[in-house]
Image (cartoon, rainbow, N blue to C red; front, side, top):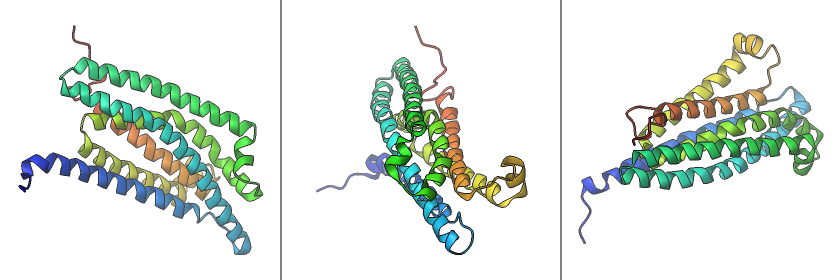
Length: 246
């Protein structure tokens, strides 16, 4: 049995390592968000109740977020295969066309998810379905608007992930994820621990749980920005804004 040469397995190792590191960084961010959500407290028994309500509301909002993310991830799976096929055939027009189509449907999906979540929230169905605890309902109400408004952004981010993975931009995505997570931590720190964040940005209405979710939105926004930079790069593997070759 002959072992494969390093030159043969190097692309697989490099890609797998980048995806692994990217996943680890993202999980650190999500775990930190849960930890910070548990610190939205005051004093005594009120603090215990407040922490429980905050964690419960955070987990409910996160499950809704993840449910929508799994739906958006279907676009990423399809685009990954189609983009890789186009690049393999050397058909830049097909790659660009697939990418544009994926982002078009991603926008529709994001707006549809936002609409569904808005209807569920406005009718009271979502809150009633998940909890009857008054404290949790109050805390969850603070987060649902953020979850609703974030869906078009999330849809774009997942679609962009699929396109860039199809273009084998694994190393770039790992670096972009590290930058995005760092930005999320920085945003949370500014909102939570600085006078500028508490008084100027939040107008004196700071809330640790809400600040955690502002951090998560910052994470997604930076993922979107860094993905867009690579998508429109010319020359680049996608060159999203390039002209079709006739």
